[in-house]
Length: 478
Ligand code: GLC
Image (cartoon, rainbow, N blue to C red; front, side, top):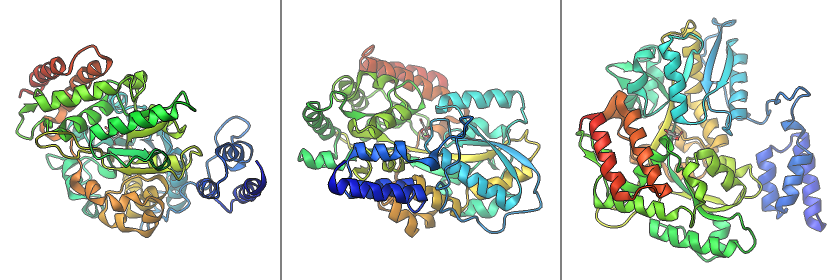
């Protein structure tokens, strides 16, 4: 560190250590002031007492996290002394410290203790674990975080929240509340929504004279050009990464590829299986062409976390991931301040369009819980507009309450959220979980396993599409 850089860095260290700046503010200011990436990394490594671990290696909760969260009024205090267990997030989730901070505020306000358990790392593994707990009618977990595609699968194990949380449910997007309602049982209250996004490095686009791609062909060409140039200095650099492992995340990517190419929605709302057509096949083969060229060979084993790691290390020009990676990027010295997002590119041919898969998670109370009242109170807090405002501003998690999209603190910290509001408020593409109900996980598994074989080169797109059609028709009776 020299000259101006060194003075800036010294002042930022002092402000950070004393708590005048949060970690995120410090990184943003450092990047803006031109402090070099190694210098920022040194600040974080040498001077982060506030992110430290206790001597027994227990992480000390980050006091910055959830600092903007205002506790909603009207929470019950007469349940003080009770305790619940909630399974939320996963061990690799960057939201962990935020959730710890939020839960501490809930306990302080209500006297209800919450044991925060992390869930399994992927949606598939998580569902498998939940299914085992439900089969044993286990009372160990009171509150479950459930995926937007699961209401039909978990409804019979859920407390009906329609009455106890009627006022809260009325504030959330009607379409998601509908999605979460199975035969009049409101299975879960929306916690956050998700949509697949294209991430790009604004600095690299500028450096290489490239504009943000609007079609997959443009993305392919630009990713290749930036990769070719960047490899001279960085042998680990790639143009693009996505989620290619055989799991739910690949179903989300595959749906985006085929819908954006006019290739159908896997299962249409009338039950017709629509995969085995030239546009879908073309989209699958295009994705295969990325593996080992603009994307690492290993992308066929990637879930979200692997994409995030490569991205935050500064080793990618473009990536497909969910909104959470935006806030996570602002904490990563290699990319902070150099990241923007857009809807995913369009395909080619008839009916080509933008397609961003709809994701998101709900909170559910287990029917086997012996602490249902405090569990409901916890959901009231976690799905409140106050919680969603802080979750959007600090963690770039998408709200499910319309008014939160217009909150000033959200626009300041996560500008893309109000900007892409149309995509997030009904424009995203749903997976066929309503039409397939409790068979959806098996439909999705058949799809992602076949598609993974296309990516690894074991099958061509046409063979896989025919096999998908046969398997999914057999499962879902199309
Ligand atoms: C995200 C989405 C979820 C999806 C999962 C796939 O968590 O919110 O709906 O199933 O990714 O990996």
